Length: 402
Ligand code: NAP
Ligand code: MG
Image (cartoon, rainbow, N blue to C red):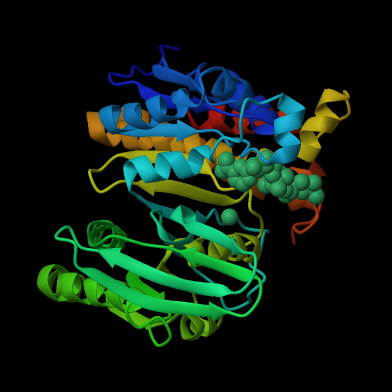
């Protein structure tokens, strides 16, 4: 069999621990036997980040802007314990945060739905896609631990020296203060990316903030979305038979639970972080969720939403059997290959990506799955497979489809 050719390389970002092991298995068993894989490789594993003073992460982000499509493995965000474990020079920032800030993107997350893994919410029949703003707010904050009595103020100094001041708190004792920001440019990019995405998917778009409490900050998000909708999308949405709907975040949560699904839900950075983990778990598992970062210039980064599955990695290192779910990482690869195919007019590559996804779903629906799913499935006669065994079972299904 001749391998499917590629014209433009994917930006490949390798990662850490169990997902690094899975990464190699997916390439070996599911991709390189069928595709003449071209990638520009960046090792974002913690050792390599430390060796390069984290330069490698910025280089990978720049390459994503240049080539347009990246696929990323889960990576460790170091804390004190990790610093000791890996003897790090310093506590590096989360690679995801670095890449999101560089691309100024929106993260879209959606469930991978299969028969036999039923959502915990009985009414959900269709996927709910989360669109998380990936810039600013609490992720780019300035914080002070207040040691005792004193005055906290917020000051904005215009370029001509004019000052705007607001009192935050007259502290009588210790406490905490935090300053956060966002920019109109980034919010506009976020809004347009969401309007475009929902239109392309022919799904309604919901947006929610807490503008009744945060009248200026969240109010600004609401106004920008409404203005862009009225000026640029109203006609297109009406023609497509879809709606744009704004409501308060708490109302949106209640409505989402009662809904059938089938919409895109745009959320501010923190709301999106929290709600997308809840959504993924409610749809079955964090390992059954796609995650795509879309930049306003049209660059795409595909990743899994879960972490490096540290506990399984330590078992793996001890030579014990593991049953780690590789579905989200497989879908990161298929998403990237499909997008590369679309951009390059390489139909064969996009079709291969579709078959890889179908093979993965067929494998689970035939009763072969990893332990996390075996524990919650409604299917009978389930075979619980090990990490590599599952990937090999997907390969068998894939060969049937090719
Ligand atoms: P995690 O890797 O997501 O794993 C937490 C637990 O969830 C696991 O112990 C496992 O439960 C279950 N799980 C997650 N993914 C699974 C999969 N693919 N298959 C089967 N079970 C799965 O989170 P963590 O242990 O809190 O974090 C580990 C490291 O990941 C941290 O250093 C963190 O910085 C990093 N992280 C990276 C990303 C990213 O790069 N996108 C995101 C989040 C966290 P059981 O142990 O009960 O089986
Ligand atoms: Mg999170």
